[in-house]
Image (tube, rainbow, N blue to C red; front, side, top):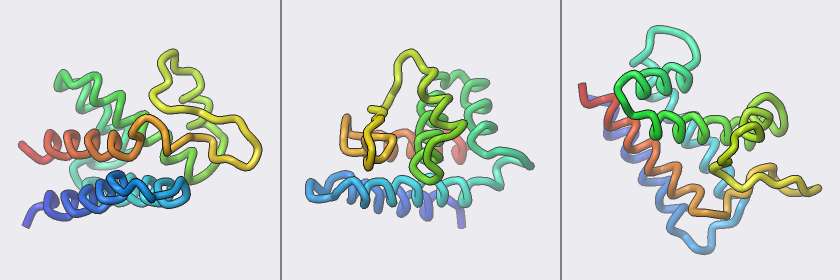
Amino acid sequence: MTDLPDVAQLLANAEAVANNPEADAAEIEAVTVETVSAFEARLQHHFARGPFFVKLRNKLVAEGHTDLAQSVYHYYLTANVLKHGGGKSLRELQKLEDQPFTLQDEEGKALIDVTADGFLGGLVETLDEAARLLTSK
């Protein structure tokens, strides 16, 4: 049995929330953190040791998938911000010239606006493509 069915189901669950117009920010944030964490757990064995998303980004770049590599890494940073709040990941996102997500700086709101720009749908598409490339060999 391969990892792909588990990853496919994980992404299908996230996509269902992404397609639900009644999903609120808290639900989207929770699904984002859960999806990114579970994605890493299910595919970690593809790399010997070390930070999964850094190694995945490096592998994708080495194989010529630079845009996908950046997108994967941006979603990883965003999930860290949603999980832990401000810190290193937020500073990295703020340094990007073309920020791929809407960053907020308002009291009482999450630091990332997960309701804007098809955020969760983009996460699903990005992780689906990365999983396909990672498991296709």
